[in-house]
Image 1: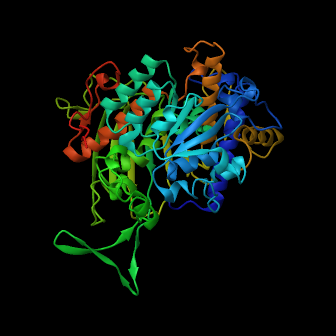
Image 2: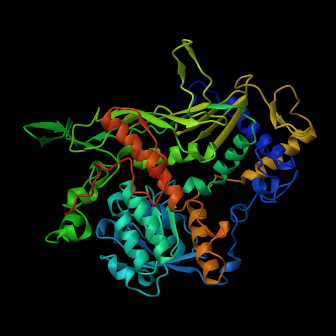
Image 3: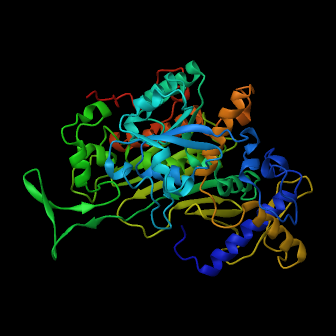
Length: 550
């Protein structure tokens, strides 16, 4: 995120953040009305010796289960389905069936662990080497929906099938955890929300940062006011997984149009395996939602089936930026993007750059940015958020950089958080609290005394030990908890019995991502409209995105 940071500066930034978390845990409030209990859920005090339990932090526990995990099925056993299987907790959510139409997924891959550090550990990791004998495979997901013993489904299908399968599942009486992006267009998002209300089913969408304790603590630090007035957030996710396919010593080429192009493989343009070709030969793939096997395997490349970089990557990070800012709705977006590298059949961009305007506290929607009469700028209270995703260069790690008038906070790769004050990246800082004022960064105080060491220890305990969870496990646990508590007659309107990323929250994330796509393709600045965020309104930002019937 910052190209010239040394390892020592990163270490200082991590220690600064730990001290800030510890100090805020000790304070009676952490600003902006965020109470100590809300920040630490009553579990962290100075000198605490145990890390905060994610379950208690997010308001659930396994006491609701007593040996009765939710019986669930996985629909879609590909890349993301494998991550969810690897991260799930069978004490909460027990998979008894799964569906996939590709033998390259269902015969071996979904059962066996991939080499570390891959999170795809397979069914065998959780259920033993006889997992394939107890977890039934179905080619057609509709057989799963007709099974009355299955209470919930986890959907990890290509984007264009999210709404269709989720609504069929809810009609069949199943609770639904669907991977992000919520749906292919906003009309589908609104239909999913209404379906959940009609069927009284729980609908949760897999934006896992809502369940990341690392992001939760970073958000609490930002909301405390420690950074001062936040004016800019820079987010990026750059990758370089393109590799030429070689034919001996020469790059392989393939026919495209009237000529030949170099053949590249990446995580979106995968090889079509011979076992998939053989198994699916002669089958009508239209009944499963695909034109042909190429669209099935490489669905992210096409507008009919995928949503491009903003849906697959940008939605994660714009969701995080929105959380940092209090889930306020953006004002407008300007964006550029295109297919600047690949020459293959993909219809989506391989690079995007977006600039969002978000309202800051005190934002005046009626005040123009520039006063033409005075020939001067007005103070308009806007937070500028930039996002870039480049598919051919991974020079910087992915993450978010939150910049305020008094400090900077960087989240790097969902693993590290670093904090610095205005004195630069080599300055150790602490946080002062009390006196009726908001917490503030103090770079003059010594950080060597026992009090600061205790605060740092408290902050580290709040963050936990070992690699931070990315939130997949916690989102599935809380999903199961909401189901079981509903079973026990608890009120469905209780805040702790609703997913942290339910239908309306996820639709807002989809609106942000898909409106950026519209800005790229229309080559114009687009202002967000309140009606888009209302599930009862027919107004949407992408009315031209109409589902193509096969």
